[in-house]
Length: 282
Image 1 (cartoon, rainbow, N blue to C red):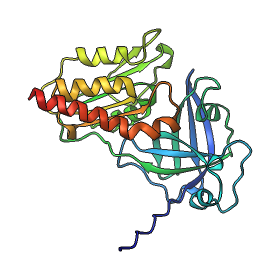
Image 2 (image 1 turned 60 degrees about the vertical axis):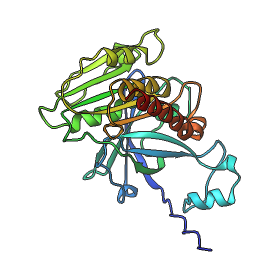
Image 3 (image 1 turned 120 degrees about the horizontal axis):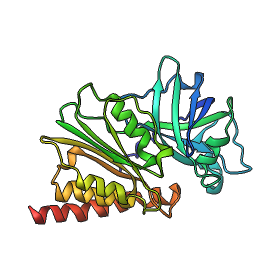
Image 4 (image 1 turned 135 degrees about the vertical axis):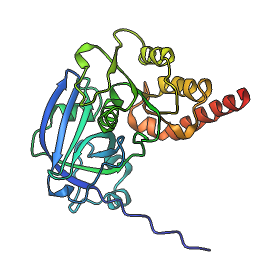
């Protein structure tokens, strides 16, 4: 019997909070820095993400911090809680990592932390992950998402070369949540108001007059509307899978722990159903 390969060590990065900034009423920016980021790198993907590690209330960990040791020696309820956030920007010269957080008062874990964290506080995280960047060979680009996808959409738009053809749609609660993005692409800001989340976004993308040529699409956000847009693009528009980056960042009624536990199976089921529909229609 062959030996099981050794489990790859997952060493977290250590950083500290350099500064914070409230961008909009519900978007908080936290900039991390420090010598602990000497081995961190990002830039190949515009949807890079990191997994912040939060100790449960009342739990402290021995130094040096070792995730694998913690999970081997402590009960599950004392393991670090992870929350996933997109890299808004990475400055390798200053070694500064910028993360933007959606904040809804005291709701959730990472949002309240970001709203109240002070410069100098230590932060540990894993990563980065990520797989999408705008394809320079595409004729045009489609980007659509809600607030949770705004950092990745912003990074993608800022990475596009001058003159690139793109259509960008971002659904937010209201005009006060609009942000300045350093891009020539005009963003269509969809103000949700009292409408169901994602409804305006699906309508806008469905009504879009698609430019000619091959599109490279990025659609992320709440899983319900992502499912609808996946069907629109993959089944109705017959866009090849390799030209689509589509995934639910989160799901209504679920915290990240619950959503991550079921996300792979949920996405696989949705994709299988829609692939079967696409095949039957062809």
